[in-house]
Length: 82
Image (cartoon, rainbow, N blue to C red; front, side):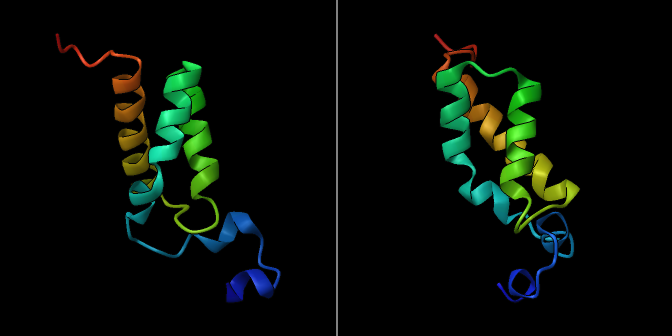
């Protein structure tokens, strides 16, 4: 919040952390992607935008994208299960 109030660009605010907390709150993006039948590329782009303010790092984005993709696949019944 302090960086935002100091008018630091939103693309820079989340770059300093090394945590993977984005995966904890990404499930709504996975549900949305599954219902909209988004391509994997569009899903990852959407995940990156969601991660910008708090977790704009490669580990956070990749972890969040994996979780969101798994949720989307489950909603679209592409999990390979019967």
